[in-house]
Image 1: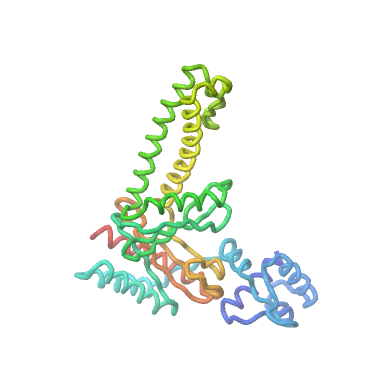
Image 2: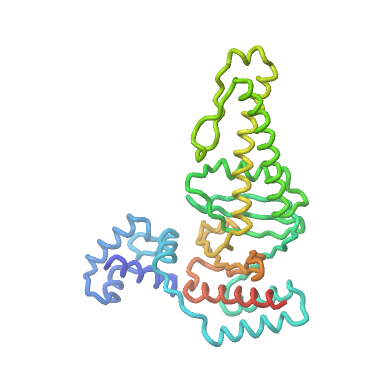
Length: 344
């Protein structure tokens, strides 16, 4: 518990002043009396865990990016949007939506957020019929990836995608390459339909070819269905005399590989279509802008009738952003935008 208290004091001091905190200062701030020597021992443990570091010799300690991520995920106590801020956001965004374009309303919303948070604000939007130019998948950790959708008009939308723990990194690259070879002028929904249809055609062809080999007594299906069908070839010697059977077998092998690729691609596309907007990037996690030493807090806004993500807005600033205040403020603004979209 004392290590948690000391870590919180170091982070709170950093977020408030940006200055490192030393053991002597810490011993005076703690509610439970602790000598500077004992505080230094705890700080050493936190440093070895990668949560804090000393910017200079004999200096106090600051949280690392890993420490900030741990604080945000496990210790952050979110405040509520102040009543006055809530009224200002709602009033100004609603006023901007009257007789103006959707893009103008979003521009005004980012201006309001920028004024209230003293940070730079960004907004990304997409339309259901947006024609895509490129799609990329960037792995963030073991079970999350970022789907980056680039439209023909230059609009960029980023969606956080849940992926299986055992998905190899090569599968993301393979899926992106497969899609980008077919993506020009298509929407995300078009892409998914195309891949599903291609998979169904491949499955039909596989059924015909495998039935031909099985009927000839040259092959058999084996293995539990949950693991997927496996074609076991039995009459290898006879295949040598039947060039057509050899061609069929090679085609079956290619179809197995093709189906596996298409199944993975369809899964990623489905996840990208329903993925949540990016929430918080800290420091070097901020791959969207390749900025170290900065953080971004963003929330999605949706079409409530379809629950599809149609954009996201957020705040960019130094890693010592006031997360407790800004996170709910960004979320609240995104909810107001979603309500306006629904009424429109």
